[in-house]
Image (tube, rainbow, N blue to C red; front, side, top):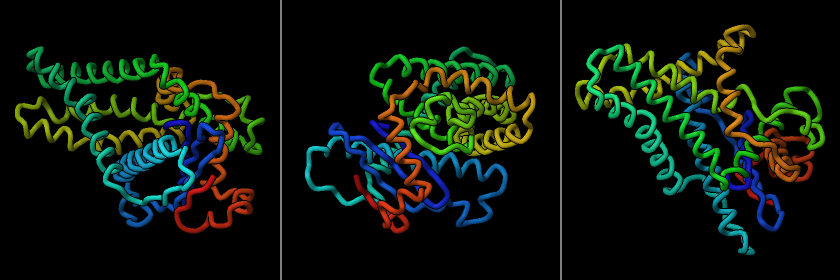
Length: 296
């Protein structure tokens, strides 16, 4: 996001954004996953679809917040934090439409244009186009100079998580020696989604009508759920499967992460402490256990 990092922990989500003035503005919100409210959503496949949808919604809310901070940094009075807005909903819907159109509908149309009739070959070619579009998209934004700082913050997020998982104190100093490519990054997840979609669409056959095309789009949450289960299984294996699943995603992160500066690590660290209810954060901001709050 714009000059910031979002961190999610059990019970809370925190977004930290640095203003041009140097201040770090934080929004912390209590959060309870849908799977915690409805236990059946923890079932295999379903839980992966829930994670995808929740991540998209939380990410868009954090992006809107970071944009608000950037546009209102000259205003002396802070606006009250919002739990819902139509612009957030519109941004989520637009992201879904563009994502499905670019990564699913466009490859489908390109494959139909080739006139391929066989079901298996059609879906293999369709999947090839989908992966190519995905790779070109990542490569393209990685060459966009304005995105460099976004990727640096992405790297800062991963460094903070690596430090926490190592058992060391999560400080800026300790994070420096860790890498920026993390095996559980969303980039890896998206690549697995692309590969799983080929197998699922082969089972659905060649789409011959508008209804068949819409059915493929309806299966996207199912594909996300299957991909989630594959990643979970690979993490338990700690063997060849784990390396095969994670290696392509780690390679792609060479495009989507960059080495961050210390001031960017500070922002990621602030988001991490706020989300996890760090003892230091709670002493400084006792309201952190309550409703959504926004502070500098």
